[in-house]
Image (cartoon, rainbow, N blue to C red; front, side):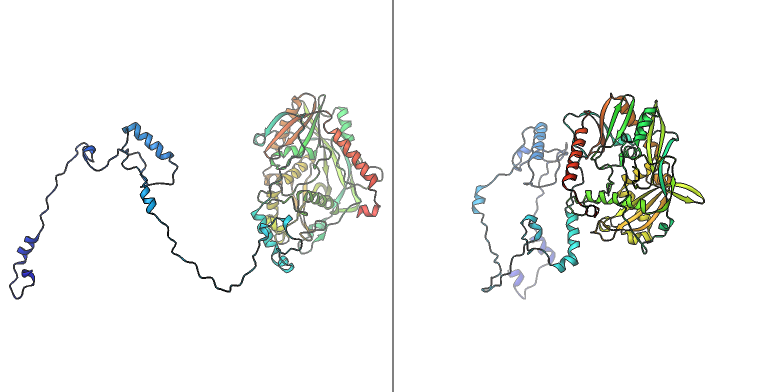
Length: 558
């Protein structure tokens, strides 16, 4: 104190002052471990020590969220390597800490005013079931709101809750059916067969000439689709065809079918919905038939569209209504684009038309192919019309693609057909790959030179009875097959494999069923009277209904 604060004494030398005040540090003795690192003997040290392995995963100081499986495996591995491990680092629960721990709520909410206005509680309509909603629609929107923004909300709900894909079986498998074979589509896609050109046996019916004025139809000048209710469209199965019966008796072949059945079997690898075909072995002959009462004659809509799901509960756009609408459009379009008064007649008349009955324009060509291994296929093929081009007549098949709601597909035909017609066809090739593949196979079997495709749309998206023709397009069957990657060799390979399988089975009746959920075919052996009882019951029920519910002709037609 005197040295620092006394004044005016003379201060000492600074160097000697700091040297005297410096602390003395003794260097401790370091125990070196020449064999490694760490203490020489952990037992002599007061610091707790536990052995470890370099392979142990060290990432957390403490973990109270794990279930203890990893720690138990680590503990067992350490027991095997080092013996009992010290528990100095183990967690010890202290009860005194729990007693002294308290939770104090210090935050306070905002003071509630003395007079506060109460608002009615809003109930979301999405949380109320449809059967629990009041009839007066208190929780719904008003009329003006439904007109302005109702569709966007409806579309948003559809995107959030998509209904399941159609996976119902086309027929219920009976208890007395026995499974014979299962054929996956992957195996069928690798098949190939070279089949020669067919031999023409006979031709029947009459064809109308194509009216070229329909080539000038555009989206700005559409044409209304007409209805031909007075014409009869025959769809006769194989064994009910009198010509095929006569050819089978005369020994022209041993495998018999129609072009619609063959196209379904040939392009089965592209199908998604379930279907069934009856195959019957009679002696050395094999007959393919469609089942009475099935949906075989109805066209599918958006069958291969994976991103478009049709709501089965929709009263307008459900699968049944859309299939009937597509079939109705195809039948009427195939007759509207043909001229009246003149026709191209085949040598033989229509085998299914009664005398004086107005029938649709169609021509049947009965042809046969040599499949090899003493198997000859005889099939009835259909041609829809004749096209006069440069003084020559060419056969043409007439088909129609229909649009029911452009907001589901994302492609508006009235806009795209004028600027990008190829985009519309590409979208349809993706969404209806199986249907277009069947059309292509039928054209190849029947020897059609061209396929005339029409684009038909609804007048209004909610009106399924009135349509307009927006445009037409020509395409050759070979070019269309190449565009959709449909190999004719694979078509014949699939058919030949099914025929070989069925011909090796004993005589009887079989059912070829497309699995509703898996990409495979199942072949069942069914009793001989499996479908006859159901058909007879349906016919009796239909006759009784016609007798009880007889209506005037004008009402029935309407």
